[in-house]
Length: 546
Ligand code: J2J
Image (cartoon, rainbow, N blue to C red; front, side):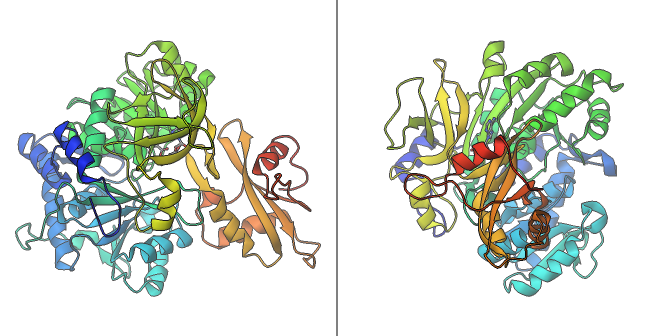
């Protein structure tokens, strides 16, 4: 299928995925309307910290009103809208309103700052940007928005959840649902743009359709046992692909279950909510899973409703995986997924050893997996190699990135995940490493090149290389090796580089944990910087630095 901004599935594949029943011809708007008709009085979304609980009927009504409001501002099908909201109920009102009118949410994370937001707005030619007020967001997003609006000519509107300040309050936007007619999207249309963890200078945008994403939701629901009795706690940032779709909040809404928003991920915030709301499943990155398993035995809160804990986003060590069941009294489900598509889960009824030692197997019988060597030749069964994948919910290309797509996809449409894996005899994947130039900081992905480009802007810096160093808690941390210019101020301290990165307005998690000044980088045989050698020297003695 051709789309002006994104390569989609060739027609023969689309036909196959429809015929197999994966693509059900639904849109998000229809899905919510159907749930609201079937279960009008059942609670869909609760935001206990703010005393909000909306039924399916209310959520659908709110999304329709907001859709009319957006339409009255001239926002419509295909328009991009950058959404940067914390875990608040309005996140769902906003995204379902945008889904309904076929406008594409661009899912920014609350941690993103000026550099990222300006890029998302400019690159997608966004017409609107949706933010929380300072009280809700804990950061002056309104000031950021004013600045970005002055820089990006397409950005006409800033809508605020809470106090409007100089912008427009989202609450003032809701109009009567019949006030405006709008064109609704087709199931094969794009639904939103998700962010890639990335390994390049600027983040890539992932175009997902209604058809493909909805399949990943109901496919996940079957595997994770999500039904209308499920209560899913959104602990990680709501817009991230994992808590959104694996099976996440949207999977739970698909099943007519209940979504509960957790404003912060620490046990002191989450455990009382689990007890009060009788949460049945949630998803965590490994460092949080460690904190939760440490805190659970001493808690006075009743966690017995919790049936399944999904852990993914980064490798969960076998030792940590073994601690989950005893500490939390629930079943661990490992998940190895990616916003580009492919999601693997251990199955709830897998043997215990499989659950604690593998990262699961794909959702779909039509998820094609190839494990190849550096020359794209399949490795021996059970061998370790690069993971390539293609299937009914894995993209065929990034949004407006034709050159990059030639490198990230094979000619026959397989996505090069950058992950190094092996497959067990049962078809489960074990993540053994990574070939992409990325740091996975406890599930938060950092493209080395993005940070390197920022550091290269420092007047005293001649060259820089950002690598991962092992960390007991996060799995990996970042270390920036910097070569200074010949005439650089000898009094310059490594900490000045961190400050510089922060001041460029990059998300805080991308600021290097450690900066070290060096005279040269180790080279590979062909004269390229050897990040492998840098990583091993960082893991050993990182030398002087901060
Ligand atoms: C090792 N590495 C993992 C795991 C992801 C569900 C779960 C996670 C994501 C996600 C997601 C891993 N062990 N269990 O979107 O729907 C690393 C791999 C992968 C990259 C994708 C979902 N689970 N990873 O983490 O797009 O390197 O999605 O390619 O943020 O995270 O990152 P992201």
